[in-house]
Image (tube, rainbow, N blue to C red; front, side, top):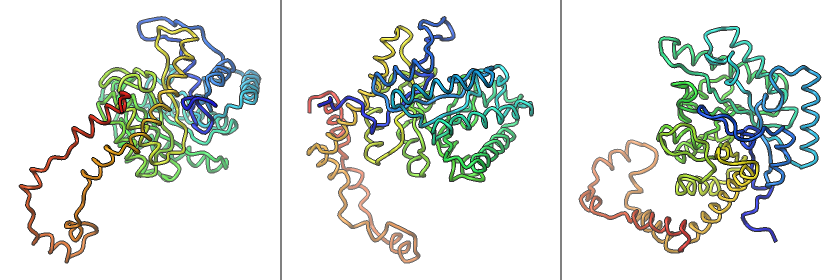
Length: 389
């Protein structure tokens, strides 16, 4: 019988070609690992037990490939998928690496660049749809500025909306079974990136022509870079019906985009995130947008990938234990106790309810004096995570 921490297809764990394929280059150092081909990466992910593999267009097909080269590369990739059973749940477009996008893609001040970005994205959507992807992610890594003298931010919003509306119509016209997920990030590689948080993205989506087609892809590291509570952003997206995809990794608050192994930095935050996803029944991919430490070789990359999935499954088990723990549940019942006395005053507004509420008397001093037992609840959580409960 397999270990409960062994990944299975129903766990829907996915990695990008760019994650396990990361060669360890950083702004101050050269690569430390040899590149792996897309076919090699598929087989590596199958070996560690992943369910699927995601890709940018140029992770698979170089930007300057001829049509014949493209066809051969895609055919070999399809063969690797068939041999391993891996699927492609999500795809995206690289609109940030090539120098042509140094001033953005959809928000570039050059209309020719904006047109090229649309062309590149349509072709990448075709590729993603052909490989079976049902989610298409947009990360605007260059959609920003170093100086606000360069761009009008309102015009940038208009340009982004025009691009998303165009691409929604393209997907509808092609008959693709595809939804879009927008990924926010506050900065890096630009000094300031537009639509910097998940909340920004949710507000923007509401202004589109087809908001029903568009959701969000929040990433742990991107929200932690800005010092935000990732769980709260995920919960807001879920409550709005917009949690189409999620990127799991880890990150010290306020640092550059570290993309550490899931759970490597803040276990308690990772625990409550896993608990939330499992409690609400999130059915999408658990995508690990992270990479191994620069210290690792290929064996270390496999350790990294296995570690992401194993940590998630351990925390899933801990979440079930938390939900079943008698003392924790008794504390929660005490914290959420309700004697019914406030029921006549809460709920939808009506004139009589408002009048009764204004006339009511509350012993606010007694309410203020009540201890809430949150210290005990948090300590029990810590003890459970440390394995002593």
